[in-house]
Length: 105
Image 1 (cartoon, rainbow, N blue to C red):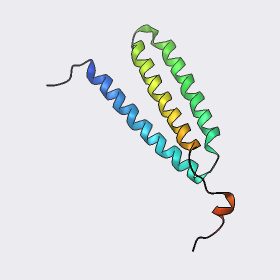
Image 2: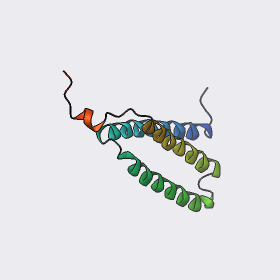
Image 3: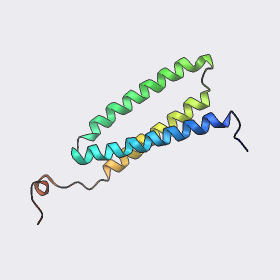
Image 4: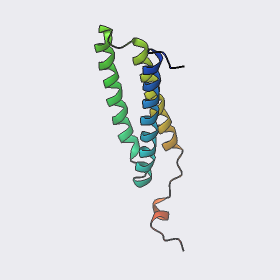
């Protein structure tokens, strides 16, 4: 049985956000691994950018082109991804600066 037209776009949106979120998490972990301690500043800039864009979307969607639930749901999903990235980065075990300069035999 095919999904209803109203459920299909919501499912597609959730799937797309999930895929983007997973890709972002992977890139964030790689960045932090390559540049220990530097991702916090980058993450704050990204969070500010995302929040500004959701504010703009909410203001422009009052014309009913986007449902309030759609914008709120997307905002929750994106913020949960950003929070997960922050938590993962905070709990990463990073080699000490001293340890990174030593060769393990």
